[in-house]
Image (cartoon, rainbow, N blue to C red):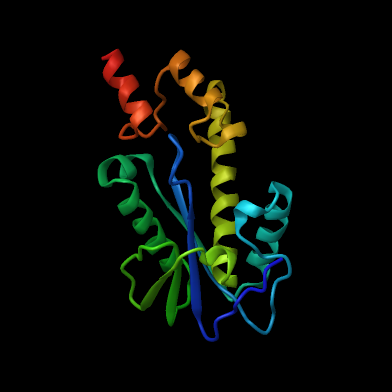
Length: 197
C-alpha cells in the first residue's frame, strides 16, 4: 500500500468515476479526512477489488470529517460534453459536503470552479488520501447505480461491465438498440443511431 499524504485542515479530495462508459451517469465524490485518524488500506479505487472498495466506502462514510457524492446525468453529458458534465458533478459533490472546504485537490489535470482554492494533481488518487477516498466513493456509488440500472435494462449486462464499451456491451447494443441511459453523443452509440435512423 502506498504512503498517502493527509493534507492539514479542511482540504477536500475530489475524484470521479464513469467518464469512459457508453451508458449511465458520471459520478463524483468529495471527501475531507482527519489526518489524526488515518484510514488503513486507502488506494486508487482501480487498484482495489470490488469487495475491498465496498468495505472501505463504509469506513470512509463513518470516519470522514465530511463527504459528498453527486452525479451528472446522461442528458447533461450529451448536452454539455463529458468534461463539463464531470466538472459539474464535482461541484455538486463539494456542495454536498455540508462543511465549507478551505481548499480542494482534484485527481487529474482539470479543475472545477469552486468557492475555494483548487489544485489538480495528476495520479492524486494514488498519492493523496482524501482523493483516494473520493475515488472509492465515486466508484462504489456508480457501480451501485449501474447495478440498479441493470435491473431496468438487463439485456445489456450492466452488472458485468458497468456500461464500459466491452465486446459484450457492444454486441448487446447492436442486438437491442440504444436504451434511454445510453450516451447518444458517444461514438459507438451515435454511429448506431445514425445507421438505424
